[in-house]
Length: 111
Image 1 (cartoon, helix red, strand yellow):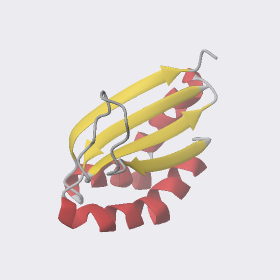
Image 2 (cartoon, one colour):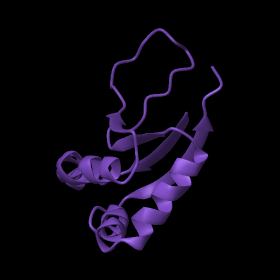
Image 3 (cartoon, one colour):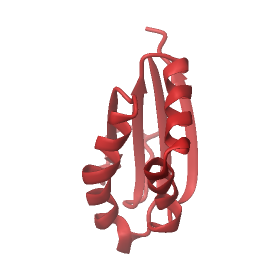
Image 4 (cartoon, one colour):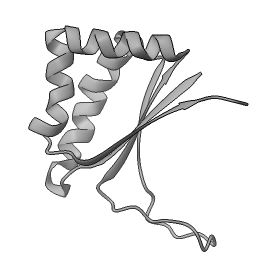
């Protein structure tokens, strides 16, 4: 199992529109292109007892896409950038919603 994690900031004034866009456009399209599961998270504002807990800014998004294996993830990327709609959706993060501070991680399940 492969977990890809995309973490980025969305300007506060664009956050609600971006979340709506993700629900209506990104999730169904990414899953139709081979992603097994797409989910998106925002940090809670609640502080717990952990001294090492980081409270992320309220406009920081963590997006996760799940794939069966690396080969499926690579096929997904090729499909996205070889279709007009896929490229437009991928480009919209920066062009339409001004996403910044993007960090991408790819994890392989071990347990």
